[in-house]
Length: 200
Image (tube, helix red, strand yellow):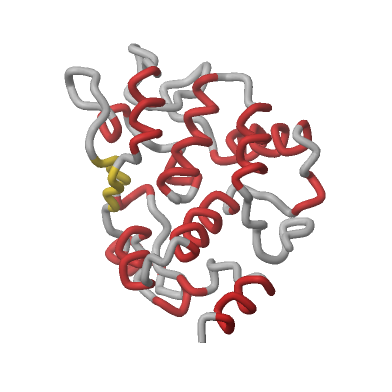
């Protein structure tokens, strides 16, 4: 469990997700949380989404959300110059529930950013997004669980694995380049192990 920014982020149950979402008052930041939950993308890339990455010119949600390569994390342990070359665009199909949320939301018309900062022409920072999530987690009474912005990515991957989606497909969906790294995201409980043995 994550403690003082050490260890792995907690995997959220559907009930945890609902409790946290309820505590986020702003529609804009609810959308940020929903995008994290339904795409499994890192929050650093989420805060840098442009309106055109999510919505078509006519204002309708796109079929795929586009996470541009320069906003995504590079492969770990690579040299600084090579990191940018290893980043790739990631396009994620829009979940039906997320599509309804996007249809009901109207981006701020005077900004290119989906999550614009209040007083600049830049997007909100990852630090600001982290503060929003931490405040909601505290209000939901879940602060002892080790929840961080990475919890939504771990939850997304674990939920796919629990639904029986094979690792090769999950790897393609998440944009991972290494199955070993991907497998570290999947939480396996004692019940999961018992159920797996029971299938023999």
